[in-house]
Image (cartoon, rainbow, N blue to C red; front, side):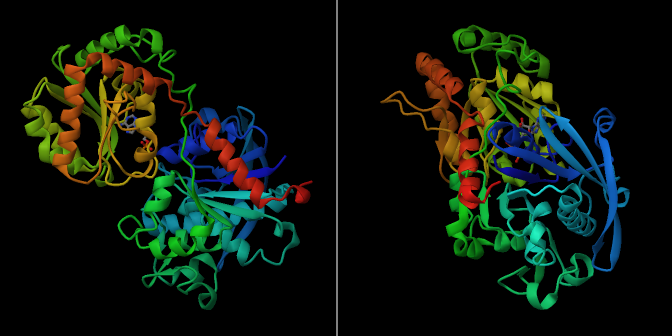
Length: 484
Ligand code: ADP
């Protein structure tokens, strides 16, 4: 049995701001053959009902450059998984896990140091330190640095998973010695942590981790190109022998249309046709759309940011509203997009509904009630929404990028295969053409549409397959003979 430690800034159900928490919450449970534990900060904003269940272990101090900082260590168990929590009120008490960048840089440098120091205190020697995103990316760097000569750490191997390359943890050069306590000569170099004259934490992780993964095979390829590489494509090309894409799954118990109590009519493949009609009518009523059976109801559940391709929607939505479609958008994010959808809803009452906010129950009613689900992302490392949409029989209309390309199979009307509609270029009229193709199938070939929705629901997007791939990766890093 291999010992794996997930090092992460968020994990469901303790703290979630995005898809990262879904992965670090679900994947440990799916790695059934291994001893997987999770370590994360003990944020002040974790709900009291969870905090009550935590058990205090001990406290000690760590050095962070010239600082000496308190580390409290807590432990708890959820669904058979052990969680460790790093306590330090100075860093973690704020009402949100993330804040301004300077503060976050120091906070997560502290976290990485505290994690490594905790292992010795716990006398827990993982075979693999599985680090997630830039917040945990200093772990491989510190392992290469201050912990290098300590035998306790000598056999540990590191995996870094990039959930979104856009976020890298960048600060000015002085952070290196003053915050991280790392030597300038060794680390302010192009083959270490320097990037464009600044210090880049994610880059440090990519350079020093034994393996690097990202959350879909296509994204693993894309990030080696300048268009998607966010300035690190050269490095990622240089490291391509250790870079691998493993697509995310979804928690199929959590997202199950057959048991989902948020739905007006829960359903499975056998009764999906009649149940989806009821869910569609209920959703239309719920969000103030015309109660019209004869339209293609398209849904979006998304962060409202540039990444999600909303500029394409802006370009063609007025034109699209001339068709027999409706659009419901549930999202929060940048004000310009929030306002834009509010404006569209005002211009097209009954046809466009915009719910600005975060609402888990409503999101499920959108997935369950819509005929189609639109995701025209500029880039998409994996994407969970399209997986949920497929499971709830809402056919995705996606741009062929990252995980969208890997998980949504294009409809082929000759062979009657596929689970959705795709377009290649980041171009509003290409998107419009894909939506209109979906309209044609929906209105002119309803039997084919229903068959496709059933195919979509039957696809297996559980963690089972991907967990096996992670396990194989760990296996390669930890030869059997070395395990105790
Ligand atoms: P990202 O992690 O880039 O935001 P993903 O598609 O990977 O995008 O994951 C988004 C997850 O968050 C999905 O489960 C989606 O249903 C959920 N979500 C996004 N926005 C909202 C919202 N406004 N209300 C409810 N759930 C949301």
